[in-house]
Structures are given as structure tokens and as C-alpha cells.
Image (cartoon, rainbow, N blue to C red):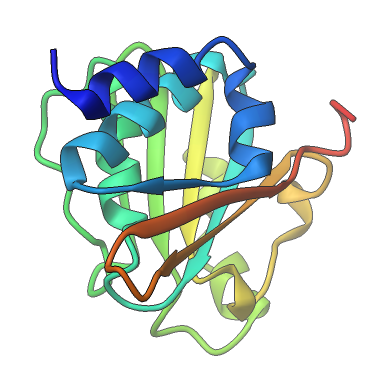
Length: 164
């Protein structure tokens, strides 16, 4: 068992949400996928996870881990050009990327809320572009960054208002 896996298992003693609120630093995409998979397994149904951070900070890798825990076999790629991608597994996963959008109105015009089939989970990259009304009360805010030592820092900023 690698040192990284041992540290990851030891950290699981705290709830995944508490650990992520404290912040973690991952050394590899595989480690990021492990954390994201655990996070998605613990997530309540019908929630939106916002993913903020620079390009290359690990947001799409995080969504790959979420998809893994939801038994989604399709390859997960950044939906920058299509804006969103729908995956079906144990739960529906909608991966959105608003990088090319200018406002919440443009996002709302996509009618993503009409695509949702319970139970669902939405992973939303670039939420700084705006939030839709249907997301309110279901938002989990996460931040991603790359540290000076090239580790990826990941932190859960806030839980859904319904769960606090």
C-alpha cells in the first residue's frame, strides 16, 4: 500500500466533508479521483457542486472521480465546447462548464433543470458566470488551486444551505 493511500485512509476517519473543509492537497490525478469518489458517495441526492479555480487546477479530474463513484463508465471530459454533458449511472450526473458563457441568463436559457432526472448530481465549473434559481439551496462550493510545490489544493468552502 502506498504512502498516499495510507494517508487518504487515515484522513477518512474524519467525515469527508469535514476533511475537505479543512482542505486537502493531492499529489496525483489518481489521488484526486479517490477523494472525489468518496465525496460523491457521501453527497445527498439532487445537489449542485460548484468547482472554482484556474485552468488545470483539477476540476475536471474531480468530476471524473465523482463519475467513478456513480458507476458511470463513459469517459469524462471537460464540456468546455458543448457547455454541458449528461452521464447516467447510479445517479444522473450533469457536468457543466460555463467558461464560455457571459451570464446566468445564458446558462438558464440552456434549460438544464428540465434535463434533471432524480436522483441527480450537478458538477458546475466556472460558477462565477452566474447561478440559476433552481440551484439555490442545493449548492456545495469548492475551490481548486495549484500550490507552489505543484500539489493540487482542494477545499470545500460551503455546504448546501439545506444541510447546514
